Structures are given as structure tokens and as C-alpha cells.
Image (cartoon, rainbow, N blue to C red; front, side):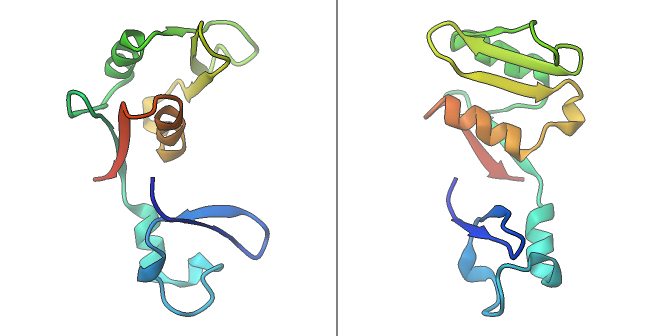
Length: 124
């Protein structure tokens, strides 16, 4: 994950992956620039680095996470609309939408941060 975290005018922080590609105008308003909107629309993929496998389903992700010591977590108020994983050796919890079509870069980066040097998010 490389880039620069920038604040919009309304105080919301966003990641600008390559700030040098943006115009020299006000970089806090990304909706006015067609290039920035196109950059945000690029699809991301989650890659398991040891095998170079692209995670294309929750089945493959769950298999990899189980191999890393993660277990399914079935408790809590969100159990019916979230898939959750936890590790007994940490306080970390990975929460994912039950519908894989709603799995996005935010969820991918959460997995990357909690599993250093195992996963990587790439542009498709």
C-alpha cells in the first residue's frame, strides 16, 4: 500500500495512490477530475504472496486464513450478515461482508495489515 493520505474539504481522509498523477489544482476535490475518478474505479485484487494465488472467493480466502491460524468467529450481533475470523494469539478480528460481491479494497487492506508479508492488494 503506497501513496499519500489526503484530507478532503469535509475532513474525510482518503488514500491517493500516486499523488504525482493528479493535476496541480485542488487535490482535495477528487470528483471534479475525470482521471481521479477513473483511478478510484480501478478494480483491486487480493493476492496471496507465497502462492501468487488471486483470492477469488471466500472459500479460497478461508482456506488460506485457516492455514495462517485464523478461525471463523460466529458470535456477536453481526454474525448473520458478516463473515468474521479471529486468531487465538491476538485481539485482531477480520470482518467481511457475507456477500463476496461487496468485498472491496477496504476489506483487502484490513487483511493485508493483519497478515504482514502474506497478502498484497494490486490493481487489476
